[in-house]
Length: 207
Image 1 (cartoon, rainbow, N blue to C red):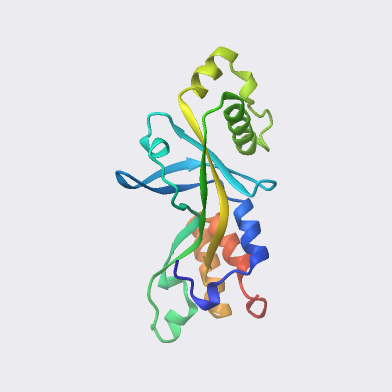
Image 2 (image 1 turned 45 degrees about the vertical axis):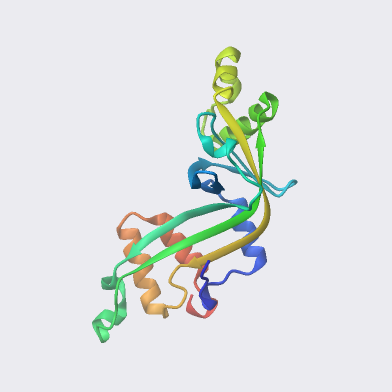
């Protein structure tokens, strides 16, 4: 993955980002060629693995090879209008761009076709998304026979992370006045998620 020098993230930040991933595209090379599936995930710190599942009917799991697999996640991305820059009023030499936080996670793909493993994986996944709700829904809230039937329709996937590439392009290369304009513009577009990331990642001298 191309990572511009001033957008490269040091290891501690990259690791923290990895732990925050919620969804992405699992990409593998199969006999059919390259296949990709969008899946929700959790990250297991102990095994250093991304945990998820795919439909049993999805041939991606059954045709996996011993080649390295790739998980791509972009939890935050947004269009940036040149009209937000203070520089537009000064000299007009501005163009649109796209800000993003992107992770390319590589590793060995392990397939799990075990009900107990799947039950824990799906329960952990549900808990991660239900956390913070007044009355979180639990997997055990559903009838046992129904849950068992649903689990039989999926297959677990575990990506044992071997290398990680992370790129944060969140307007860090802009001067203070332009950064302020980007943050204000994103918030006006109801993109607080992107605005807060731009604000949090801006260089110290530009805060």
